[in-house]
Length: 70
Image (cartoon, rainbow, N blue to C red; front, side, top):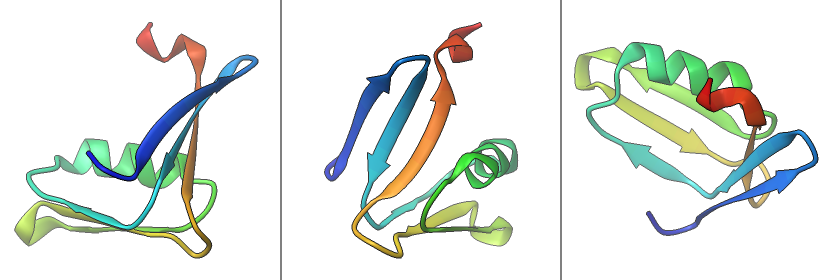
């Protein structure tokens, strides 16, 4: 995916992402991303299973624990 990168900051992973629309996204994944978004707006449209990500600034930041694999 273009306009996306991830970095590790101490005990967190931070995903930086510009505006995007993702199709075929489950409601569980959409809720997970919405809950963890630090900047920007995340909107889920269930009838299309589409996730719309709009950044207020330049990037959407999502911060995840490095223990996310567990």
